[in-house]
Each structure stands twice: as structure tokens, then as C-alpha cells.
Image 1 (cartoon, rainbow, N blue to C red):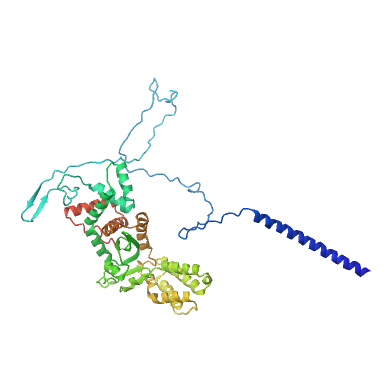
Image 2 (spheres, one colour; image 1 turned 90 degrees about the vertical axis):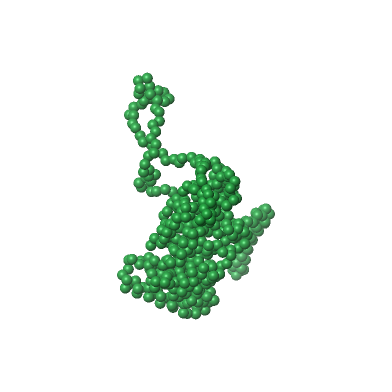
Length: 476
């Protein structure tokens, strides 16, 4: 009898447990059924591949300086051109009073409120009364001219106006320095000084001014060819809908742009000269570039961009996540970072200690480049280290050589922005003109010159046939 009661009790517990499970399952079924009956939401639209992902939100920080910091105000101008005294109301007794209720003011004080403004631009038309005649000795037509008077264009015998030196310099800066579209330039000229121009006229004047700057462009090329350290890079550039390339070579004080259909070795050889690497005076020249093979044709020391190597390591790990813990990628990244950090301590470390650290880094590089890593991606990058082993540590032995090609990247960045705005050039002559003007203006900016006055100075020199030998001479 006792055993029967035990069995009944076990069966009752089992029944209660099954009932509870049944109730839970029924509730889940009801929830799923209700969810299915709802109208399905539209799937999230996936952004195109060329759209950047949203940046992660950062902790909000109140803009501006911290409390207690000295106020940042506009500095006082060096001189005051105009002094004006606004009229103040006075009462019947000649005392300063309130303009609203006419009550006398107490504690009257004097102030100086400084306001900086610009003078509204206006068009000034100048008629140059010149005299011309035929020179039988020189066998050409001679005509008198003023310093700021542009030379007459061929075929301009009929009475017509042309742009002056200030209008030309302003238009060049708008197009090249500030990368403004042609129609925006015409609107700005019309709205501010009231000068009417068409986009085609600006294009024509750009080519005309570039023709006057050709001598400076070739002189700039010669100066860069003789420099001790030169950075080089290239990027895409379309001309009349055809793919081409924009090349740049630059030093700390000079930049030269060149647009070409080719990305081959002949282009950079023509820009730098086949003899680049040795200046003819027993001194070597260093070329800083990325790992593109066309730069390997030059003799002399080279430095390959370490940032490009870091970027290659990062992109490879992103493409093959299983390599995130691979020993080669960890050691290579650490080595490159140590190289860049060591160069920053050039002036802090004793020469003997510095050379010892450099030798240790070169040993670590040789170890990475001389092994097989049992992975195709690691072996590929290891072979690159082996090929360019001598060109990865050049900057550690020369103070003026940088371990990255950031100088060339910075020189190309304004051109890339121009490319995004304009889509490139409409003609080969327009591309050449832009490259000449961009080279001259970028160099003037690097040397801390007033770009507007530099353009005017160069145009005056070209019009008068004068030479300016010191304008782009190496300042080092």
C-alpha cells in the first residue's frame, strides 16, 4: 500500500511539471503567433559601398576654452586710418543726454571702438596712350607701355579692353588657390567689383598667365632636381574625359605639378632627370616615395614611406581577420612604430647610443625579412621588406630625410580637392596651365610669400623682359 502511494505521488509531480512546461510553451507560441501577425517592417536600406560608415559617437565636450583661461580677442591693428566721432545728443544746457528721455547722463566717459573693414571693390578703367613704330634694326614693331600694362594680344588691333594686372591675379588665385568653379568666379566678379566676365574668358586668361609663368616653372624644376631631399607621388587626373595622372615632386620650399597621360617610369625620369641621385658635386640626393616600382630606377639613397607600410599591414589584417594575431604583423607594426619614434629623438640621444639603437632596429628588420612565415600574405610583405630593406632605414641616418611621404601627400591634397570640384581638365592645354600656376602658387605659399603680390611681380617681370633669379632659389 505504501509503495502505491509513492508511485501516485511521483506521477502527480510529473504531471505538474509537464503542465507548467505546457503553459510556458503555449505562452511562447502565442507570442510568436502575435509577432507573425504584425506587419513586417521594411528592411534597413544598405548604404552604397562608396558611402563612408558613420563615425562612432564621441563623448560630448563643451566647445571653447576652459574656465579661467585668458580671453582670446582679435589683436589690435598696427595703424588706424580713419578717426570718426559719432554725434551725441545734448540738452539745452549743452550736457550729454539720453536720446530717448533727454535726461542728462551721469559718469560720462570716452571710448575707442576699433572696427576693421574692407573697402568695396570697384572697376577702374585706364586708357594707356601709347606710341608705336617699326624698328628697322630689330625688324619688329615697338610700342611704349607702362609697368602694369598687359602686353597687347596678337590680333588685338581693333579697339577693345583687356583685364588688368589686379583682375588677372585675383582670377588666378580664385581658380587655383581657392579652387572655385569658373561660373562662381564670374558671379563674384559681377557682384563685388561689378566686372562682367564669362567662364570662357577666365579659361583664356588662365592659359595666358600660365604662358607668362613657364620660365619660372622650368626654373622651379631645375631647383628641385638639385635639392638634397625630394618627395614624389602621383594620383589620378582626367583630361577631357580621358584617364591620366597628376605627378608632384616637392621639397620643403618648392613644389612642382605635372599632368601626363602616363604613369610610367619615363615621366618621373623626365621630371627629376636621369642623373638624379648624385648632384655632380660628390653629394648624394635622397628620393622619398611609396613602393611604386618606377621610383626604383634612380641611383642614390631612397626612403620608402613607412606610413604606406603601416596602411598595408592594417588593410591586410582587415581583409583577412584570421591574421590579427599573426606574429609577423604584430612584430612588423611594432618595428615601424619604433623606427618613427626613434627618429623623433634625434636631438635627445647621444650619437653613440643612437647608432646602437639604429643597428638594433636594422637587425630586427633583417630578421623579419629573412624568414618564411607559412602564410601567403605574411610572405608577400616579408619579400617587400627584403627588397626594400636598405630603403626603409635611410631616414634614420640622415636628419633631413623623413620616414614618411607625408610632404608629397600634403602637396597632392589641394589638387585632389580641385579634382573633386572640377572633375579634372577639359583640355591638355588647360591641364598644363593649371599645373604651371599651381606649382608657382604652392611654392610661393611654402616660402611664406604673398601669393597675390608674387603673381603680379612675375607678370611685371615677364612683360618687361626682366629676370628674377632669386624668387625660387633654394632657401636652405
